[in-house]
Length: 79
Image 1 (cartoon, rainbow, N blue to C red):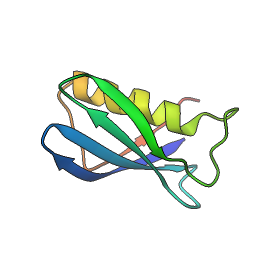
Image 2 (cartoon, rainbow, N blue to C red; image 1 turned 120 degrees about the horizontal axis):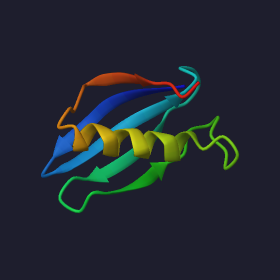
Image 3 (cartoon, one colour; image 1 turned 180 degrees about the horizontal axis):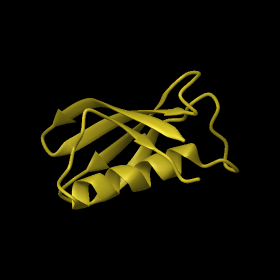
Image 4 (cartoon, one colour; image 1 turned 30 degrees about the vertical axis):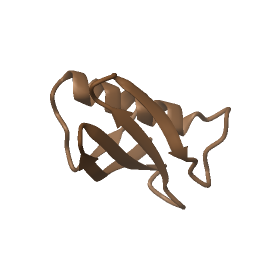
């Protein structure tokens, strides 16, 4: 599970903080709406290649953009 929180929305670019399991230090993902591309800006403390919280957050932000739904906060679960 990730908690996502919109940090910045400026000039067609979104920055979301993501927090794995809702605890610990957050990471950040950036998504360019015009190019439909995202990248990991800052990895969360509890993120690892095996868990992939940052990559899952990027996929969720892309999904939100495709649905034209940009919430201030949301919970991402994949259980």
